[in-house]
Every structure is written in structure tokens, then in C-alpha cells.
Length: 362
Image 1 (cartoon, rainbow, N blue to C red):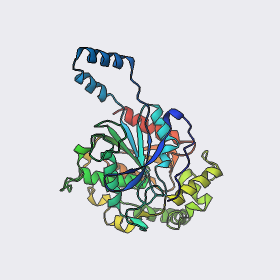
Image 2: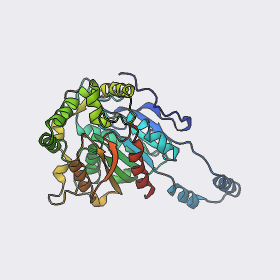
Image 3: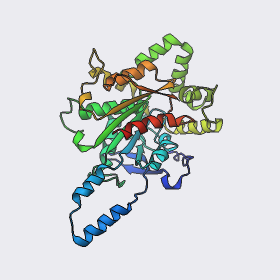
Image 4: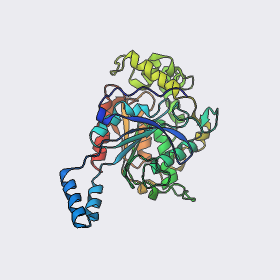
């Protein structure tokens, strides 16, 4: 396995992301990045604890009340050509500095998380969903397959996915909250899910309809997307890489040529195996959507949801973002000023502000 990416550029020692290999309950040895703010006991809490220990009083109710005020853990899931590192450069240190524990793991097929089947070049969506479920359950210190991250026995979790990570989350929601969860392998009771966010997500119908729209609009742009992903030219061609992920070449979005080369080295590392599109085409989330409204049949059972699109997204068009919003039961998405990779570059804070507003209202 190639070595992991170098430490993120943000050098805030107190909120520095930590990368490690952890065995998930699904059996996958996954690359996990954490950025957990140090626990600080306030003076009133210290006095209350001392008083309780001296006089043997029961402070269960006050502890329970205090725990309800704890900020949720933000669990991030990346998309194609990326891994957990993409969240660690800006988002994780930023949110940790505001008191939010942050966690992310790399899906099978990336350099840090090898595929379970030795030598496989494709990964089925069911494997990603199983790993995501094991990861989320493992965030609890009380679970038998706990990852041991010290987040508490029942941490509130806000799950945030980008690009193909968003579609993986849709499939996980389908299995967890849907009517077909007969074996109860994924249960909402197992995970304290406080919210869900999808950013520049591949829509429930996948890439097929979007690809046809791109072909009708611009053969050049359609070729760039095909060449960038299918032929993997995003790894070797700087211009295509910039167009797809970072907003093109007219404005570098604060990303230097050295940054592009660094990201391309990560893309090379994280495309050892890619999503099995043939398998996914048979299991797209849109198959369950209401024909008239486009809503998922389980949206009324979900916690609060937000869907974000980007003004300069070269990969996911506005129709795709609108489709995702409808599927998740929203009237419309929030559009931020950003290219597809909302978490990287000079404008990363625009997407972060959208997250902050959402979690602040929970």
C-alpha cells in the first residue's frame, strides 16, 4: 500500500487530524482520520463533581442534561478519486476548533483501505454500505465493535457525504430506514443520527441521466468528464483535474500547481479499485422514489437533512442537485459559491458555513 498523504497544511497542534488504521466491525481494515477537540472541564462542572463525590449525591440528572448539550460528532464520507484526507485539510481542523469532534474513514479501494477481495478492481455498493454502517456503529464506545475513539456511549452523529459518498449514504439510509430492512441488520436504534448532509452528491439516479444532459449541452465538457474519470486523466492532466474538481484554470481557487500535483498523487493512490457501476446501476436509490414527487419512501423517518450544490460544479449539474433535494424530502437545495470540491481551495469556508448553520439549528 502506498504511504498515506502527508499531514494536512493546517498546523493547529490542538486540533491536528490523526490518521490510523482501524478494523471495522464489517471486517475491513480502514484508514480512519480523527480530529477530536480536547475535553475541557469547566469550573462549574469540576465543583459539581467534587460536591457529588464528597456528599455522595446523585448527579445523574445533571450529567444527563449536560450530555444533551454536547456538540454532535461530524462524520464525513468522501467521493470517487478521494479519501478521508480531503476533509482533513480544512474542514476537520476548523470544526474541531469550534468544539465539534470530527471523524472520517476511507472507503475500500483507496490507498489506505485495501479491498477485501485481494486484487479486485471494482467494489460493490453493498460493501461500502456495510463499511459505513460498521463505522457509524463503532463510533459508540458502548458498541461491541467500538473503534475506541472516546466519543461516548451514544454520541450524536451528523453524517455528511460528498459526491459518490452522498449516494453511498442514500443507500445506507435506504437499508437503515427503509421498509425492506427485514433482517434488521441496520437499525436506526443502533446509531444516534442527529442529521444528514449531502454536498455535491451524485443524484439518486446515478450518473447516467446527467451524462446525457452533459452530452446535449457540451460534447467537450462531456469528454472531459469521461476522460477524467473513466480514462483517469484527472490523475495526469492538470487542466482536466482543475476543471473537474477545482473550478477551472481562469481562477486557480487558491490551489497552486504544486497543490494539483499533490492531489493528483492522492487520486492515483485512491483509485486502486473504484465503484462497480454495473452493479450500482441495478440498485440505484431512485428505483424506490415516488414517481410523482421523487421523494424517498422513508424521508418522514429521517432526522433533519440538508442538501448543498455548488455554483461551479463541473460534475454534478443543478438538475442533479435538485433531484437529490427532492429525494431527501426538501423543496430545494442550498447553493454555495464553490467548485465541486467544496472542502478544498480558497472557498472551502462557503460549504463549511452551510454545515455550521445546519448543525447550529439542531
